[in-house]
Image (cartoon, rainbow, N blue to C red; front, side):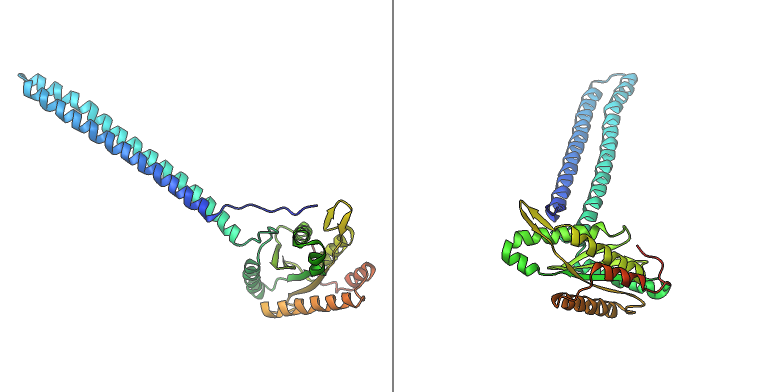
Length: 288
């Protein structure tokens, strides 16, 4: 069971693409100007020679008419060339916009897990709290970290620890909705932003994640299986704080209390967690 890594384009890819299109446009310009100048010079030269040998009025008219044909062709060629340049430019602009969007996504993602990173999590949380302060809509967050990751790294190596982190991230992503935002906050720490979610929904998400980690190893290679647990802290607006700072402190305190109780061997059994869900107030009905 291995964690997957998402590949994103680098800034060098964007620079190389821009340079390639610029070279293509420059080549088109050179061909257009050279072709137009060559046609004009040849036409005028031939016209001068013919005019010098003309003896009748009809010859002058015929020669001028004959000169119009290549000049018109040269003008037409330049128009077509410019249209080609416009198409190339539009193609480049569309390509560049796609690349920039991917780069923005890259800047907000964690490389190992492909979850969002700490900066994007806190930026999004600040925005959602501001919205909830106006709309009074429920909002919840989960903060969690992997218990005993240092011991796993010491015993099996950091490469195995990375697989554990990536697979815990996959488990978190599996239990989030499209409207939620899951992030790796650093090291073994994760956060989930649950939009339009009340206390019951937040604890429901935590419960499902706990249950999966109890059943599924986060590393499996040959006869080696590694099971892990996570300590989770839950907070929400307005029941667990009315600002970003208050919500983070609430969830962090809750997570620390769960970690301490786990170390003391007093962490709730699954049956106790179900009882805790049943005793939540009924006015929280959104859920996940």
